[in-house]
Length: 454
Length: 63
Image (cartoon, rainbow over all chains, first blue to last red):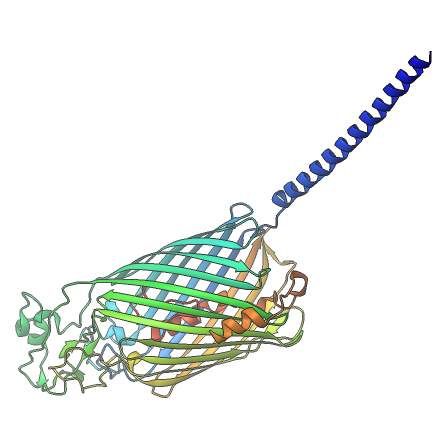
């Protein structure tokens, strides 16, 4: 009897031990399964890089004027207007990937480019627009880009393809970038590269075309129907470009850092190598050692600009943004630039967004820019026919420029205003006035509408 | 280099919950979309390009 009681006690003990083991196993299994569920939740419910499709419509209206048109050799009207409209659609493909389509057109009317052929109506004059086909053009661009973010959002890969075209220029581009975030996303490093394979459909000043290969020179109707004054034996030193390709390669490095809970800054370093036809084929040059020829008031070209077939550019820039308080933010930018054409440049800008209500922000801004002249720049009628390279494009001359801007934005984070299935999130309107210390000035009005799909 | 060195070794890490002001849309370090056409106009009319998120060369018959 006593033996049976001992056996029973032993069985009970074993059952208790088994119970304990089962309880411990269950606890371990529960903890394990809970932790797995938690990890699974992290993956399943990670924040999407972009919550919903966003659509931006960007537009601008640009005007400029000046007295140093490159088309007419550094003298003449630079009047130009340009209207641009662009749609940027960003589509989240899943939690990590975004596809962005960027498509835009730009239509310009230019008094100076109309003077590629100044003789097609009325008396020719570099300060008067002509009405020919070269007076206006349309530029179109489509860019598709794709980005992928890692699960922890510390790595971002992106790639893009672009095509743009206008009457005398075609471009195909390919690019990519890699971004890595460190230090609890306080530090960011990036590297990017772009390649553009471009080609000109060279358009030359009308009076030079008869002096190209197999041209009929002074027997061309342009010269038989119009009287040449000044040097009547017009004989320009003109040879069409034998290659019309232009390739551009760029490599960029970026670094950004949160310096304080109210301050962050960034540095960017870009290297650009360009090869091929870097001259603009319709920009005239007048030599000082060649007698001048005219039709009406328009001086006939001695040649088109000639620039080296390679150019290496380096730009280093920095931004520093400071959240002063709930009302004012300071946004600053500085860039130093130099290239192997002898140009150095400084750019500095400051913008101070001022929140006047929870929906409206004002954007006063100022930008200073200066550059030295390219080694090959020659003002109007100062190039020599013996020079190897020359241009009278005043965009490559020495100058200082000041730009003042003012803008206003409206933001409604709840997107109450709707058009069909898209809600209006923000509107930006800005105006900038740009003046060089030469005769050139320009202004631009820009607008940006940001919509979010429901 | 001084900026990078100073940034990396002298700044306390700002935690996610402290980034309310840093995440303000006006604090973004990239070019704002609404300013893109202004930057493009500069790249056509000025010799200097790059280091600002805009064009660096190629894609247009510009400087």
